[in-house]
Amino acid sequence: MNRRRFIIQLAGITSATLLAPRMLLSAGERQAAIEKISKSEAQWKRILTPEEFHILREDGTEPAHTSPLNDEKRKGTYVCAGCALPLFTSEMKYDSGTGWPSFTTTLPGAVETSLDFKLVWPRTEYHCARCEGHQGHVFDDGPPPTGQRWCNNGLALNFIPD
Ligand SMILES: [Zn+2]
Image (cartoon, rainbow, N blue to C red; front, side, top):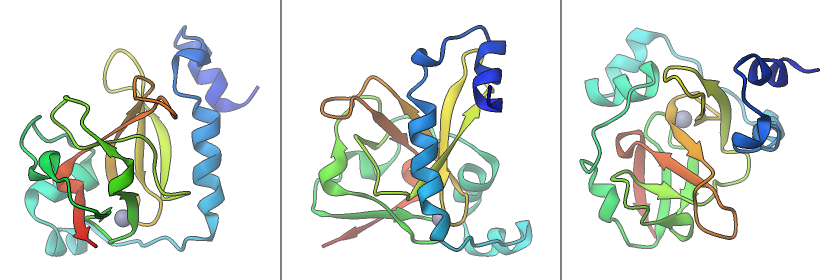
């Protein structure tokens, strides 16, 4: 029994209720080739706004319906606001109606996941595979073909139009 499964069983929840965490993990593991970026808290504070710092480095969540990226419809690439690693393309974006930029999948290996127990119900957190900046949470109520909803903080992303 691996540690992740053990934790899930401890929480009294079957792994089926979580979004295939093993599959998501393996996507992160495939990204082992990406060299990590490591900065001190002071260094991050110099390059990020206080709001970006709160989300990326303190696992914060921006208020719903506050990001201009909610309405971004142009073709382009969404990159990590911390290190500019491409995480999503405009083709992956859809309107989830939640008030946060939402995507059906990620670029291969661009993010890593972990279980987040901040709320009563565990959620699958994901973060940039390069700088480990928190991006959002992934849920299993997305549209086909993946059925996934990658619910992202707009402040954790920068949009680069084609
Ligand atoms: Zn990053």
